[in-house]
Length: 117
Image: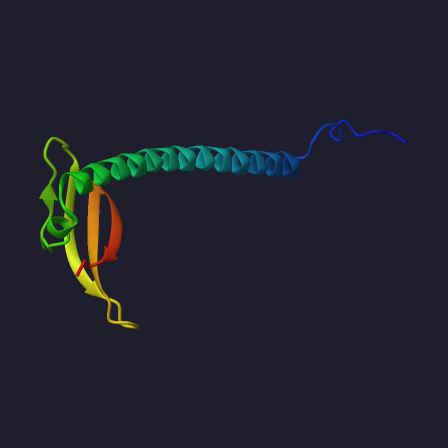
C-alpha cells in the first residue's frame, strides 16, 4: 500500500472541530471565573449590609424603626447605606408586618417582622 503525500496529519475538519471545542472550553472557564467574582462581591455586600442593619436596629427602638418612612433614609456616618420601612398585611391570617429594605451600594436586602402591639 502506497501512502499519499497528503494523507499524513489532521484534516481541516478535525482541526476546526478541535479549535471550536477549545474555544468553548475557554469561554466556559472565563464565564465561571467572572461568576465567582460576582458572587464574592455580593457576599461582601451581604455581610456589610447585615452589619449595618444590626447597627441601625441597635441604635433605634423597635417601635421607632417600625414606623413606615415611605422614602429612603440615610444612616449617619455610612455612605452608600440607606434604608426605608413600610407595612404589609399577610392575607392568610391578617397579621400586620413591618418591612425593612436596606440598600448597600445598590444591592437591596429585605427584612420583615410582625408589628409590635
